[in-house]
Amino acid sequence: MPKIIAPKIPRSLTPALEADFTDNYTKQTKFTGTFPLRETEQLVIDQSYFENVFFEGNHYPKMDLTDVRFEKSNLSNLSLYSSTLHRVSFHDCKLTGVDLSDSLLHNVHFENCVLDLAGFSFTKFKAVTFTNCELTGAEFESADFKQFSFQECQLTDCLFANTSLNGLDFTNCHFDKLTASIDSLKGLKVTEEQALKLATLLGIVIE
Image 1 (tube, helix red, strand yellow):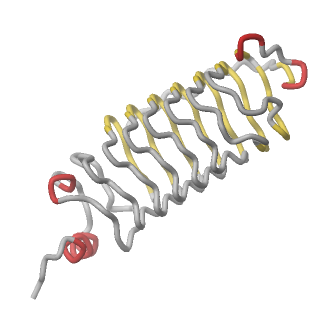
Image 2 (cartoon, rainbow, N blue to C red; image 1 turned 30 degrees about the vertical axis):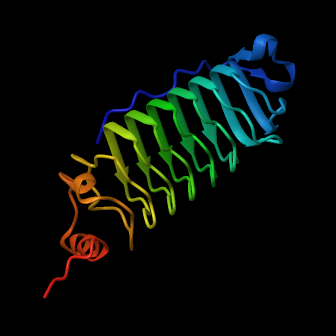
């Protein structure tokens, strides 16, 4: 399991309603309730904390988050493609259908989160973990995994086309089916039961 560097957030934070969003930038801010900014691009947020936050808009591409923690917040269906997340953590959050495709995630941790139908295609992951997360139907097409792990996650119907799973461990995860090529599966660690499921999905007949 990769070592993840946690967000570095000061104890004293400015309430979001009093925060200065000049040039779409804010730091050391605490967000609660409704996110104060409607749809915008290239929003930069540093050293901040989101708790029980709901986003009114859904289009926030090219967001830059550094040292940010999300707790019990709803980011469902947000368009965050081409974003950069560094030292960011998500705990008990709902991210159904979130679009983080073509993004860069470094030192990011998802724990007890719902990420069904999430989009991570063409995204680069470095030092990233998903722990006890619901990822049914999530897409990881052409993704790049380095120092990456799934722990106790639901991976049914996940898409791993053109993505190398070499070195990953699915033995404590769960799936009925997923989409991946034989080349993608090389080096993936699975249980005997999971291997039989994968063989069936690939059309291999076992007698």
